[in-house]
Image 1 (cartoon, rainbow, N blue to C red):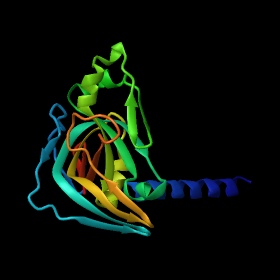
Image 2: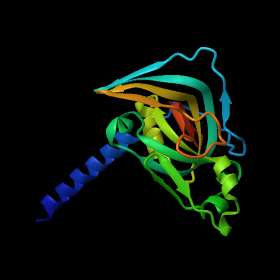
Image 3: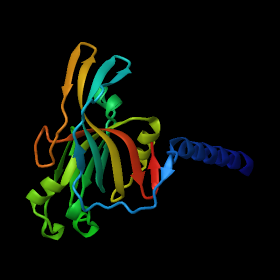
Length: 213
């Protein structure tokens, strides 16, 4: 009686281990320096940003790099999107905070919700930050992973992890079936509203001491 049950348990254990192994990102290199989140994201101009062409089924788009971009911040919230062409190209939105918005005592009392590619937060006295400060020191980021390994790394990040993303801010133009696409990235950290999110083509992710490319 117990033998079939034991066999089933072993099969589930093997399948579970296989799933974890296949979804675990591979470390590309290591950097022992601590991730410092007390500075603003680094954005620099591009002289010649070559477009990145992406074709996924009926989706045919060009990612136009508009700036080099590097951000070291705390993950405040993360949401997976699967619907439509957006879910194929931009599978994750992540909310990042820096300076006081990366201090655990401040953000653990900061409720954040994400929906339809936007985020909202609710300020309370325990937050120790004003609404205006949070607007200027957090960002909603649309993530385009450059590789499957980067996607796995993004998937593995936990809330309140400190991370560094390195890549490009990009505009997305192209077509999906008969639908024209024109999705532009924010180029400043001080904007708010519908068009205030950064679209990041992520080349590498640092989590702790590990770098994933």
